[in-house]
Structures are given as structure tokens and as C-alpha cells.
Image 1: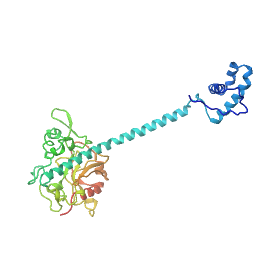
Image 2 (image 1 turned 60 degrees about the vertical axis):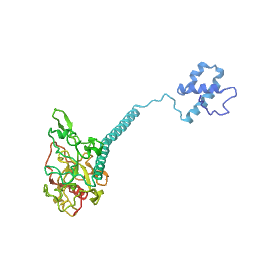
Image 3 (image 1 turned 90 degrees about the horizontal axis):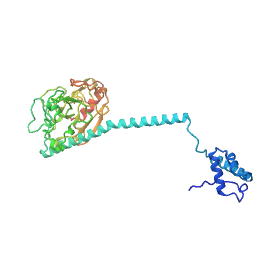
Image 4 (image 1 turned 135 degrees about the vertical axis):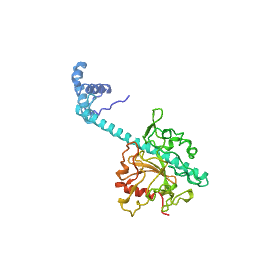
Length: 347
């Protein structure tokens, strides 16, 4: 048991007054708010009043020195209000912080998906004698000796290929290299859906597209010569021919209103460092799922969330359904310049 030691001057404490008497008086003093004498008078004879008075004075002195305030002190109304407001503010900060982690969680998951997809693309090339898969579609046939990484056109119709992974995702030559996981082809932050043939609304199957630098590169010249190979910018058909893998993007999250075939068109002509902003063009729109940025992977295997600086891309609304792609870059010209620098190099 914890015993409270009370400093009582020796000159005031007589030998026949024990510790128990001192403890009793102090407890009564605390309990009766510093007025134990009145109760003590009813319990002690007049013979002990003088001794009790000495003990009370000693206890009061110890009480004041120690700063002990008893157990009967309560919060005032103002103190309670301050406490409630403080707890409320702390709860608000906590909830806000947790809410902000939700988009970050989606970003991490998207980067993981894109990283695995890029590794599958690399491994497929290794197993195919260094030949890269392409993204040529839209009625122009498959490039000679190369397979399409994904077939089909994505839109907002009820066509089965929009919502059923078995149509295009599971038939992709890269599907076995992805652990047969159809979710890797879709960004978890992509909320685009379509109405299936049975009337049920289902998520679309794909969010990612491949750079046209691994195809014919029709839009790299900023002319859109569909079906015609560019002569200005370098194209890649083998893994070993990529000159700067760390600055050559492979897959990118495409805006849900912009995505169609499996290729992503971007213009290098008109988006070079010396070109004026007025000539900059957006071909296909990147997404802005991740707080105004999108996930993008590169030929060396690394992935990142790139934050768009201009509002034309960074704040592009999602309207559903699709909108025309080719347009002036506006205040996003700096973003298109960055994308061009990370697409390919001149021949």
C-alpha cells in the first residue's frame, strides 16, 4: 500500500501522536475540503483537541506545499467546450488524412499493374527472339512478323469486347505472361462503365494503351497519315533497338473518353523544345485519374505517376462518351513537350 509521508515539524509532533493519527487527520482534511477540525471535534475528546490542531496545521502546510487539490475538482464548462472542440479538430484532421490516402492507394495499385504489364511485354519479346509486340490496329492489319499486344476497339457501346475480358484481354499474347490476371489491363481508378447485353452495368476492361513508337507511328509527325510509317522519328520493332529505354514510354493510362484502339498517339513534331506553344498538338489524351496525373511505364521497366502541369490535360473532364482527340494543347503544351521527349528520338 502506498503511504503518503507528511512533513511535520519535530517541534510540533509529540512522541505519543502516532502515524495512524496523522494519516487519519490528513484523509479527513482532504475529504472535508480542508475543514477536518469540526468533524474531528465530534470524534475526539477535548483532551486531544490541541494535538489535533497541531496536526491539522502541519497537514495544511504540507497540503499547500505539495499543491495537492483533492479529488473533488471538476472541469468548468469552458474547459469542457475547449476539450470537445480540440477532439473534434483532431478527428477532422485524422479523417482528412485517411481520405487523402485513398487516391494514393489506387495510384500504388495502378503502378503495380502497369509494372507487371511492362515486365510481361519485355518477357514476351525475350521469348520471341527480341521481336516486340505492336499496337497496330484500326483496319490496317498487323505489322509483318509481329503480333498485336491487344486487339479490338474500346467504346461505350454494349459490344461484348467492352466489358467481357474473354474477348480481347484473355486472347492477348501477353495474357499468359501476366499471370492470366485481367485486372492488370485496367487502372483501379478508372470508373468508366458500359451496359452489358444483359442490361447490367459493368466496368470496361482496359485503361492502358501502348505508344505508337512501337507501331507505324502515324501521329508522330503530327499529320495523322494513317497506315503510313513515319520517316522522321525512330520506331522500334526489337527490344535491343531502343536507344534510351529510360526515356521511351511503353504503356500509359489513357483518358476514358479518348481511348479506342490499343495504341496511344502522340505528336513529336511541333512538341520539341524549340517549337512555340501555339503549334503544340494533343493527339490522344492521357488520363488524370491520380490527382491530375497518370501512370506511365518505360522500356527499362520503371513506372511513375506523372503530374500534368496544364489544365487542359490535368483537369480534362470525364464526360462519357468519347470526344474528338486531336486538338491544340493550350496551356498543356509543356506536358506535350515532356511526353514527346519521352516517346522517341529523331532518325
